[in-house]
Length: 232
Image (cartoon, rainbow, N blue to C red; front, top):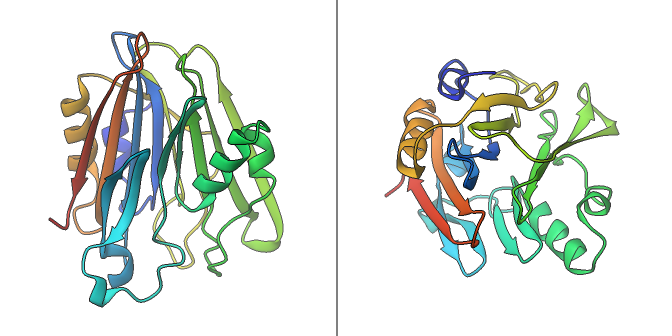
């Protein structure tokens, strides 16, 4: 098991990241999603709450250059579960689940982002009402865009105080290397405010942009949500 804070502090640019897991008291499903940026366009963003989740918006619309890969709904909530992703595949997953086809068929409709030479992976997750969850990553084959690799990880009956962390980039670089291996098993401790503060303070100060966290009560479905934006 890894220390989430150390993983974040040791990586100046993990890109966008998802943590799904279970609170230490075993009563709540835990979600975190963060975005980082190196360009002015990527850093010019905030998270805003919507009726069924959150969306990204330009902090200063006059500085927005290309919204295609940076403006989307990272989180959308359905009766079937809470969807968390790093791109507009959130809507693909939502629509496919509403149609009764499930999470996996949605992934087969998408691939990595068309931003060569990085070919940023699409990372996605869904937390089901009982707290079980799935994570996935769609990435190029070692930087070759002619082949899409789809890895899916399923976690039934998660253990109290544990979670799994997946992110887009293995580390900083040029081009940026895609995440490799399985999602990292991490410890989760404390209430939502302690957890939110730990994640935010551990992210690289220069590159971090926004953070969303949510604790979902597994007994009644009620939620606690926190949003932190570097751009106030």
